[in-house]
Length: 220
Image 1 (tube, rainbow, N blue to C red):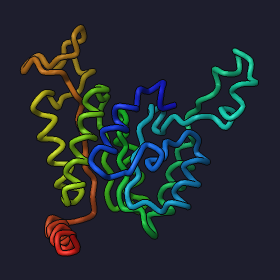
Image 2 (image 1 turned 135 degrees about the vertical axis):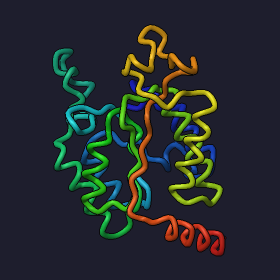
Image 3 (image 1 turned 45 degrees about the vertical axis):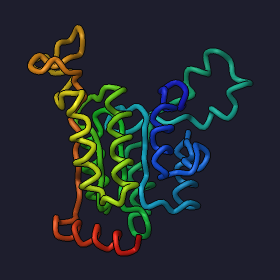
Image 4 (image 1 turned 60 degrees about the vertical axis):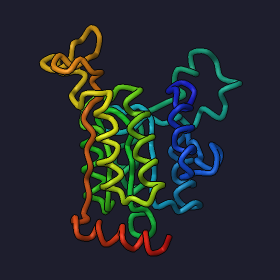
């Protein structure tokens, strides 16, 4: 859930740049069914997912969550589950045929899933190759949406977010002890907090991205 993951700061950062009118407009989803309905009814061009990852997939609320109040203590431990990987991919990629252009997986170890989504037809996927520090994930999303709301295309927004992150973080694997002190989570070279390694996957060439940005400016 949003509370257990402490996603409220990330949500507020995303709404602050005018990408979404409010937290309600952002639509914080819980179950896979919620995701399926949201994609169908809202037809977004960009899908942002922040949750835990596991076994090459993502952790969503279980359908049992709607009965939380009446469940026993033992049962409430099963209020989340790892979504079937292929089912998740198919649920998202079916919308790549129409409106969905970009998926932002703001979660640890989502590179393999991102590759599968990209192969499934998604034009652009943003993910993390490694574990990501919570503060870094929030700051990265904040910078990405700041650039996107200013009229930049996905790649420029990603590059802007990377540059912003480098001011206070080291873009290295927090779990790799060759680069990160396991005691304080800081890079042994720069002493900055180890953020993780963000990845950008896209079919668009640099020329196409530049043309897209120019079109956006003309529309604005």
